[in-house]
Image (tube, rainbow, N blue to C red):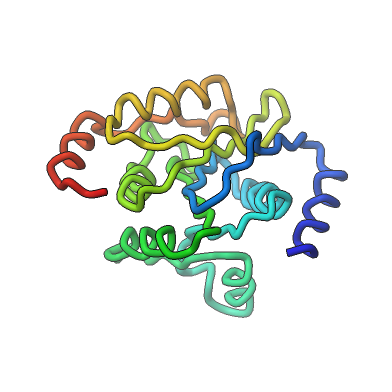
Amino acid sequence: MPVRRALARLHWALSPWTLVREQPAHHGPRLLIGAPHTSNRDFVLMLAISWDAGLAVRWLGKRELFGGPFGRVMHWLGGIPVDRDDPSGLADRVVELARTDPRAAIVVTPDGTRSSSQWRSGFYRIAYEADVPVTLGFVDSVTGTTGLGPTISLTGDVPADMDRIRAFYAGKRGIIPERTTEPRLADEAGLAERLAAEGRR
């Protein structure tokens, strides 16, 4: 960990981006949103942010990244391979990790790098079911800043929680600004009803 933190400090000393450190620091497992996620360059920023903060970061990546000579490197960097053709069981794996590792910071990018009209709701389901808070990580090309924003607890009132998330990301633009997506789920009221019906927590 000291080596990773030293590398992160060197990165921020040379980077054109200004790092915003978490205030106050959260201790314990969490889901960490990375948004707006518009470029693969966000990956480097995510590692530098998490290593600077001393987080035991884990991140979800497509299965193809973990093959070949760089597969072990991806695992060492905290990657969790995802089979996009068969994602069954992924949520349960992530929930179990969040529940059993007291230092876990599991990075999710709900908007993806391609422009879309909506965020994917998986991050909300995972955080709510695991009963872990969500840290709002960000990159903002408007101000040239990136880092960790507030950590919030989800209530199950999906529209209200998403309003808080929208308020934080309002005005922020990704590295490729035109790909920035508003934090909005397909059916926020419907998701709240399904979570209530499932009675999971």
